[in-house]
Image (cartoon, rainbow, N blue to C red; front, side, top):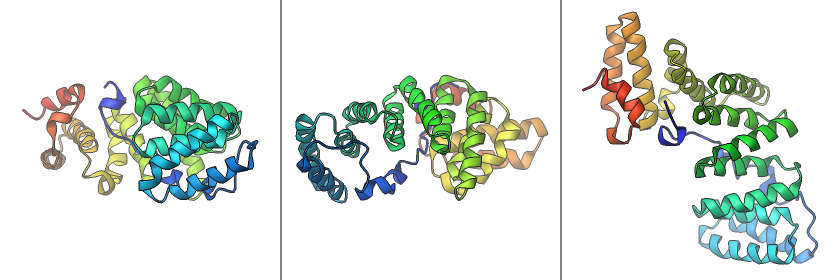
Amino acid sequence: MKKLLTILYFVFSVSAFSQDPYFLGKTNYCTPKKAESKKQFDAAILALQFPKYYAGATKMLMKTIEEDKEYCDAYFMAGYLFRLQDMQKEAVTMYYMADSLAQNKAPIFKMNLAVSAFRLGAVDLSRKKYQQMITHFPENPEGYYGIANTAIVIGDFDNGLSNLKTAEKLYQNQGGVKKDVKYLFGILYTFKEEYKTALPYLDDVFSTYKKDDGYLATYVLTQMKVAVETNDEKLKNKARKNYDKIKNKNTIPDDLKNKLKEYFS
């Protein structure tokens, strides 16, 4: 199966970014040269709660950057606001500058850059930043999780699984494994065509992703492959019922659709 970006939408913990302590405004990875710059940064953080102020806050930060060119936090917050406005190219540019100026001190900068680059299709840049996260922040599970995500596009599935196992252990040590980790295990094993291994992982996240067409298509394929191999008629029927739940079958990528055609005309 080819190209993650055309196959499934993955969970990147983006919703958790705004919960990071960084957004309390008490941490800056670069020291502003002007006191006014920090005030503008703090104002931008407050603006995150009010979408109608996103554009104005972004414009303010761009002016801050012009006057305080090494203030990496202003670049980052501008990038974050661009992302919230679905301006991905601008977000990546700002994140890249922030990460460069921070000199490997800010995991949140690398993580946001990696996620936005991936969404933009810059998979090599995304992989590079996740690898840097592992190098500089080895206790942070997100770097390993990101390697596993990018492995589906790059095709180094074994590398992805190895890193995902490390992420799983770190998540366990830090409070528990997320559902999307199990989902990603299922996807990676499915892409390796190890369907029996994949199925329990996909079973486990059904309640969470049952309305997602990408998940359902992958789940159905895995169910049918296992059902045929084990001659399990009940599992075949479950697969057929789940296939019927896919709302928009035209959005299933061709390589996945072709595999499903073996079972569904």
